[in-house]
Image (cartoon, rainbow, N blue to C red):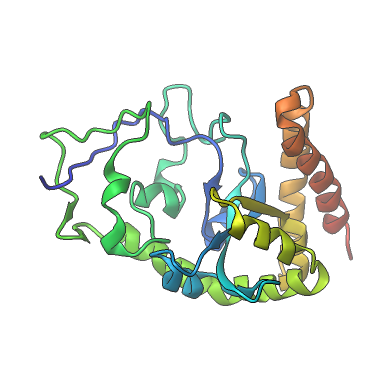
Length: 253
């Protein structure tokens, strides 16, 4: 059976963390509260070689080397809807939505030949995989690859910047290597989150003040939304701390 797939606009995938390209993160800085999410890819993973191209390589204290992806991300709790999701479950920025949303369900952080399982809807999702849906994947190849290729190209283009950021973080926050080692040793892996302010400082973007000014009120609003929920204590702590960082960065001369 050739995999078939069509979006039904159920909105179920429009919740929680949303990995972005750097280009999309900057373009939507007034909309999404942003963070950098680090994910370890072990050397025996199918996507290891690709991850070293899109991310960076880190030597751990046990002398093993892992690939690390660093993704600009719309930082939202799992059950929080995308800020652009409308009450009718349609995208409010459809004409200008991020590459990640356009490429779904395919994922350019994986090799093209390893995409088949992504066409199986997650529990509760209402994607159309019936015989009426179009064939989208054949012989381990994506049939309409325009969006996939665009997002992959953006990821490759930003890779040098992400490596610069990784070098900065590992130099000035060396304890993060131990966090990555714990993630690499854990069966379920894990994610490490760092702030946008550290990224702006490391990369010395000329638009850092403008991005910080756009982010500060978003972080403040998200801190208020998560204040009273103990299950979201980590999100609240990050939002509150990052709001102050963004305010200070926005006021720098």
